[in-house]
Image (cartoon, rainbow, N blue to C red):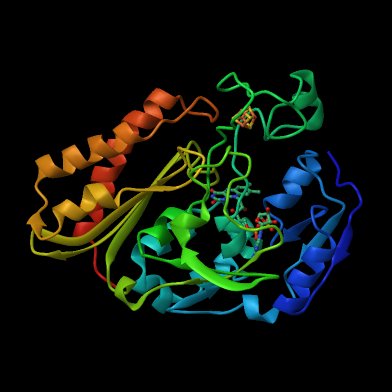
Length: 327
Ligand SMILES: Cc1cc2nc3c(=O)[nH]c(=O)nc-3n(C[C@H](O)[C@H](O)[C@H](O)COP(=O)(O)OP(=O)(O)OC[C@H]3O[C@@H](n4cnc5c(N)ncnc54)[C@H](O)[C@@H]3O)c2cc1C
Ligand code: SF4
């Protein structure tokens, strides 16, 4: 496996970045830490001849309690104990991404926009060629759910569920100007699974914004994976809420590592507000969430096992969040 040549561009402002993106329309990718994109390029997955590096765009760096620049490295967040204490579930998720080496380069923006994964996709060119490729790269059919319309590759970023339960918004910049939208809405629920976000062509992710109400929520992120020191999530459950004795308020749950995008369940958790969260209610909530999700056989663990673990992980995450200290 090798990297084919590409032309590297190094803008220094957001305006210059989106200007370059317009010039190179359809022929470039943004490059953040490169820990996801470059391994995919080495496997010849959807190569582009130009890369726009975001490293020198000052506005994309830095973090404080209410804002995280898209180019903040995961290691930058790990080095800030006050930030981690304010968001305990997010702290769990950051520490669960890959290895310290990957977190030293990998960014928050890259994590939110990480390519979806499937064992028919994350393979060398020759491996994929031997099967006639697939819909997501170079081919016209899906090997997981046989048809030619939709890709079922799994969203496997750890940070998105943990940020969604905090009510995070993303700030985007494009040729038309800036816009903000809830992080959950960044992911395209109606898409074909190949186009995985609602980013307009050339739009760049500038920052993640966290509302003041997110501070001091109790939270937890629980991740199921094969090798605990290394692997992408086979299931990731994030919860955040406020407890007053046994009563819960503003409980939110989001799940990643199962569907082609992260999913939230506010319609199931809002009716629980102000009520004691008994073991029975907790079990019912876990079962209701599991019923909504449809893992397919495209990662290491079998879908039936991943599905059965959803309820277990929801119960564990909520119980541990309740016991944990608020930030
Ligand atoms: C061995 C290994 C293990 C891993 N394990 C995990 C894991 O357990 N959990 C996990 O979540 N991830 C994992 N990853 C994936 C990856 O390392 C992380 O998700 C990382 O945070 C990605 O960030 P990056 O800056 O390197 O992204 P890049 O690779 O630079 O970019 C990823 C994608 O996002 C786009 N992009 C990046 N920034 C922007 C922006 N600001 N605006 C618009 N588009 C942008 C890029 O064009 C690209 O499509 C792993 C990677 C490796 C190599
Ligand atoms: S789910 Fe289907 S189309 Fe998508 S990457 Fe896997 S095999 Fe390809």
